[in-house]
Image 1 (cartoon, rainbow, N blue to C red):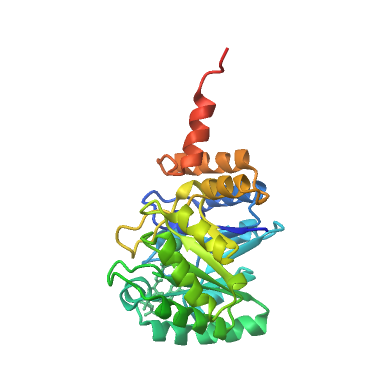
Image 2 (cartoon, rainbow, N blue to C red):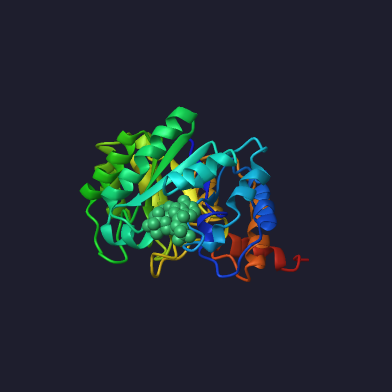
Length: 301
Ligand code: HMG
Ligand code: MG
């Protein structure tokens, strides 16, 4: 069995940070992640600069890394974002909506149905341009404004994105409230409409459940995981949400289960330590913390 990791550190990871990270440093970070073996990396977002100033310069970031033999994704909320992404050579774009109206309104200022109408012209142009489109559904295990979200509602939104032509649907536990049983029920409901092999798990770790939820999802047959180096991340429009599950923790778990990831942990740790130093934080990843502590320990005589 193999699991594909989609690295979120440069987009989800940095979009919520108070300390702005320069385009140059974002490029260095992405190159380090790529060098560590992370071949698919979300590198930026073509969204309103007023909404997410941290993602300004995503065009220059993409320009700076697109020559590398990897797959670089960017978020686009509408046709304007798609045009900007294409102008700098994006080959894979991600559209994003949610399974709850409250979060959709807070995040992208429209209803779920309106977001789908915004995506239609994006999908048509992407098809004509040969661009692949990934679809996100947020708040799949709970909404910061509405609480519980029903699996059948998640399934309906995921099916709509799938029917629109997305090649993969990433299911976001935006505020990290899920638990394994709920994650399984949600994935099964979505799996009735979209092949399990075409689903990805994008679980934030706010309540420390992400790894357990991922394990449950792998048991259900989902083999794509979104994670962020150092456990960075969060959405400014999801009150209380903290970072994505940490890539180090995911890699450690998978390798420990005999599932090859192709990620060099030492190189990943360098990328994480550099970016967290830049933003003045320590990594929240348990594995990064453990490995950093081990490296600091004086050699035993
Ligand atoms: P709006 O105000 O409804 O849009 O925002 P509008 O069409 O009325 O335009 C308003 C202004 O935004 C105009 O500028 C537009 O030009 C500009 P002004 O005339 O005021 O100067 N604008 C744009 N600028 C740049 N790029 C664009 C664009 N579109 C319009 N593409 C909009 C709607 C979606 C644009 C806005 O609400 C927005 O940008 N929101 C940001 C959402 C976001 O990036 N959230 C974080 C990412 S999602 C996430 O983190 C969840 C995820 O990780 C999964 C999970 O964890 O669940 C993916
Ligand atoms: Mg997210």
